Image 1 (cartoon, rainbow, N blue to C red):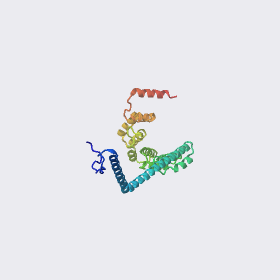
Image 2 (image 1 turned 180 degrees about the vertical axis):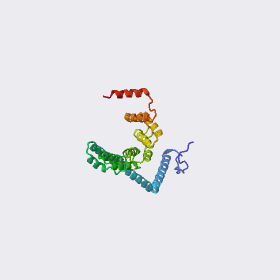
Image 3 (image 1 turned 90 degrees about the vertical axis):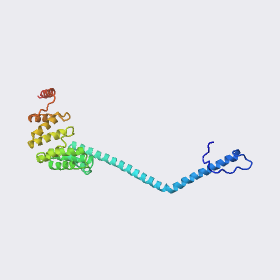
Image 4 (image 1 turned 45 degrees about the vertical axis):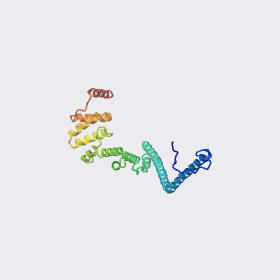
Length: 262
């Protein structure tokens, strides 16, 4: 025989004259037991809530406050970044239209931040200074971006490249080499420009054994602009390094160039 739940509880006495388990008295007894059992469980739940409810409520409130603060911060950051991005675009429009002073005024509010927009604004500001013939000031801006650990690495590399290009004749050649070598890597974004300048720096160091293979590598890189590849191929040839992989391609390119001459 299968026992009912809580079968160990004492059953109320069966009234005299009533058969055990028969009639409404037995059903009323079982109903009474269920009510008592439910009441006990409700009381246990209430006691647990009284013991731990306050701590749980505090944790929930703190979590909700933290979540609300994070969502507000995230939305604020996105809104701020969007507005600053629009300001950068408007400054670029002013500069491209030749209104350099107006463009510089807009850039001043953006250059203080140490993020990507701030770095881009400083690079643009340096470009304006170049247009104005203020090369020393432009180099100062480029050097600041190159040394800024908060700026994106791509912007830092570009700033290094522009700074070295402007000061190539005045910077000690050893410094030129040390600053350009990390950028003159095949497959890198600045391999062509950095490789060409690094090759020239090797020649200033009287190291044609390093310059020739580097010019040849630049000439063979299909991602480098064709004009730069042509210059690198000529330099490699003058240094006795063959930079032509496909003779037919080179011949066709040369024929096309000859046909384009007046």
